[in-house]
Amino acid sequence: MELENIRQQLISELRYSSEIWDDILSDTNPGNYGVNDWDVEIDESQFYADVPNRTFTFKNATFSGSLIMGASKGDSSFDMSFSKTANGSGKFDFKDSQNVQIDGVVDVDVDMDIFGDD
Image (cartoon, rainbow, N blue to C red; front, top):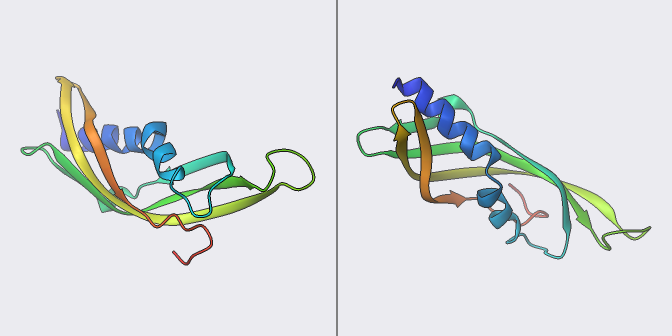
């Protein structure tokens, strides 16, 4: 399996893993909101996979989205967009000769104070 294929599979899994990013959203400041949507962009040049050790790291990813602030419905609710820089690391394993998957918890460092500076 080529390194580029491993990197692409891990980046894709990171970008779309609701388990990782929903957990982070539960720790925002302030809390008590709904989530309209979120997106993760990871620059391939900032992603490193260490195949012999089955680990990966990423830097300067963009975690962005739209939160529903105030009441979840009605005139008192409003959308609040956010965009934060995230760095992280984790482990992966081979599912078979052509596929990899994230193994365990991904450690993500991101300041989720949505009113604070990035």
